[in-house]
Image (cartoon, rainbow, N blue to C red):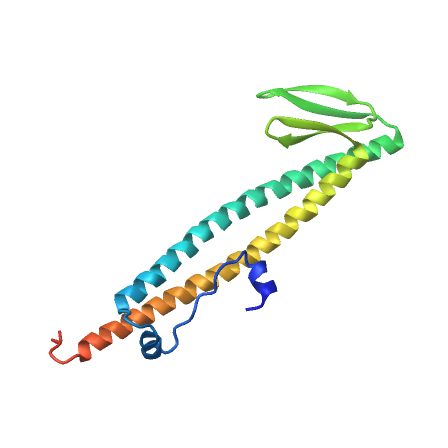
Length: 183
């Protein structure tokens, strides 16, 4: 695996496919099939935990992208109003089903909610630039997360197959052992 591939997959270790179980077991000194299965199961559990974590990040990001896009559209609208020097009429929610009518004059500044009880005032142009960068960054992160999840799921499948191959090898070995009873 190249260095760039490893970095692109968050340092997720590559699962080794056990093609020849006899050779695999012979290459590991003093290793029983139970120990090999235990080691693979630990790796499998790490993969599953990482899968859950990455899926949570992906869901959060997928929820943020529409919010960023909507805010960017509103800032674009404010930019158009500013350029045309027109007022904008809108209705805003006061509570429940109560709305109020408002006339908004062209504005040079807009407040962006950054989270953690923080709101900053930006010029409309700066807000547009910031939101455009944030949207682009969020889309790139989502694409990267999708690639990492695909890679991780490939590793999970490879580990599951390797575990099954070692387990089946062990069952076959036990059956062919002298003194083994057949059911």
